[in-house]
Image 1 (spheres, rainbow, N blue to C red):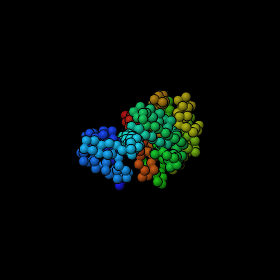
Image 2: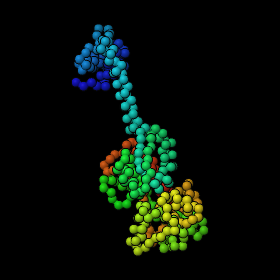
Image 3: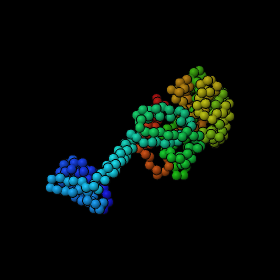
Image 4: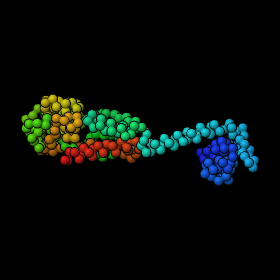
Length: 303
């Protein structure tokens, strides 16, 4: 017969109460049930724990030796139960994820601030990496999920689009540029342009898509980070070629995104997970926060 937590609880209550009836009342059990559990516990230990009389029970030396250890076990079990309950309801825990550098520099600061405000007991660890390293970081670290843009299918990975955007020309919100509803790729020749470097995932996708339409794109400047492009545009150095969802008014209030057409190219942010792997309660809560923020962003774009 194996030792149970319930038996230890009964043992400690009887030891402290010095009376079977009183201990049974405290535990919400019958006296006979308490007595039976004590006998079973004595069988497990192979030792007598209490000398019984008609009026009281008297702990033996073995009981006195065992009670402190029993209380430590019960305290540890209670602590584990509370910890797992907190993990289950998401009030404590740890969430680890990877995010593409562009996503990390634009969306993550407000999302992290809101999440920490409402979930102060959850630790957050995230890796900001180039988009082409996103899946590798997901598969080779403790990250539970990744956020960013991934093209095509990836073995052993599920990709769920959670924010859809358009490749756009981003410029200062004034003059002739601000008056345009959309801009054709061929019309970009009228502007100095800023684009991501050729080795970046977004630029590779742009060049491949344009090639299918017999077009090419040679920017005036090439940079490695979205925020560098946006800062240069805000300084009047040119029009950036970026997804429209990157242009957040709180970061760059003077800029506006105009959809690029002929051809129109989509760009999306996805939730990337290892196929068949469940998210922890903390990660589930964080992903819910991301969905909420993206839903607000989508609604603001459609106004």
